[in-house]
Length: 559
Image (tube, rainbow, N blue to C red; front, side, top):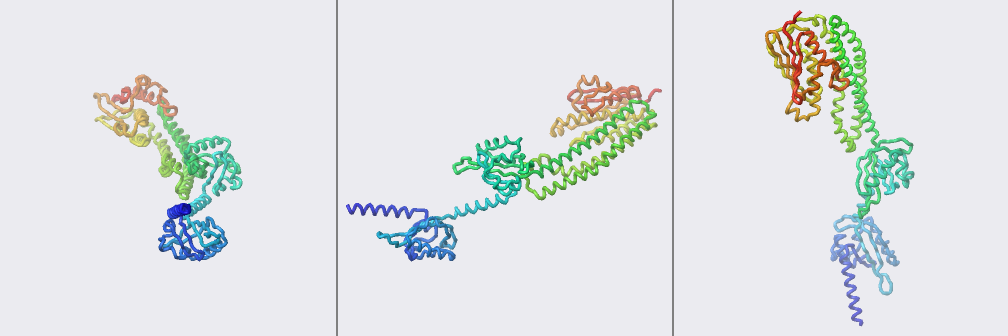
């Protein structure tokens, strides 16, 4: 019976020794004098000493110089039979490196209860320390962030509130923590919270959500929200974290740019309206058929036009200055906030911000040039309608066509990213008797219509299609016989439907949108050719392919 008990006790000791030896923790025993008696594999791994190196040595070899006094304090507690649990301290490895450990220290007693030694269990907590340091570092980053960083429960109750949140929303942490996050939502944004919580419960993340929130003082601010679910170790969503960034400044810049663009568009529209008024005036002057008074009429028109044009021209410079001020503000924003949110960067790419900044000053310069050009056009109108040019005289038809093309050069190259190809196939014509100013107006009306048709067609085509079949205007002249010359003006646009062709020369008929045509151009052109020059004006068009206007007039006019 005694042998059986001894065997069981021996087996239990073997099992205990195996457990001690296989433990990942360092398990050490020592005398009350601090001499190491036992040293397991965990101790070898933790401190770097083999058992044969450690056993018999004093345990102080593991203590850094600034921790020597700890040993005497521990021995004192052991002699009193006390136990020390989870004492966090620092020990030194064989290679001299320091490690953070947690010590559990117990007295070893004999059968009479007398303390005869000490057992120590040392656990490496370096990783835990590193995690704690990382958490402290992260907490410091969160607290010092300029952005508002907030955490809340799935019920919307605020759990944490950093300094950035205090600065952005005006509430102190003690005012906000424990409150519902809905206190930050304007009345028209209350539904957003439920939608956000729903996404969080599904484990989704919301990035750069631009919205509006309400400060403590009631003012509204534009913010960008990045919202993430907070999960526990099992992956279950237990809360929500929010990072809110104030984007009020960028929104103000954006609104200012939009207002500036609207102002530019308004000025451009005013200039366009002025040009349309000039064209209407031209039509009315020609329609009057009173060429003797044309000079006086144009002078009066020019006087009335000059006043609004001068007003527009005088306001272009301050408008330019305002825009440059806004651009300087934008550059300051880019300088001090060089890394905006991805959504802002995407928007900048979408509107091609760099090109806009570069092109705005050029646009104002072009508008100034345009205003000067209007003044030039007014002067040109006086020259264009001079009395000596209103009478029948022998002229070079090609010079009249070329002068018209010069006036329309901006239309051929200026409105699109590609130019309209111009092909001239002039025959050998003699001088032709005509009224030059009126015939030039016919050329201008027909070529303008061709340009309009090509531009409208090209707006519906891709760049590749335009490259394969570029827009083109072909002007040809020839002698039909010894008494008649022919001028053909053709474009390779989409053609004119037959039902429209039948009404082309009717007064006030137009297929253009309101404000882009009076419906008088071709009607007056027809009258000039047929009534004033005893000729003919015809239109040949193949829908979907081309349109050609054919002018035929005699070389000599009969009195």
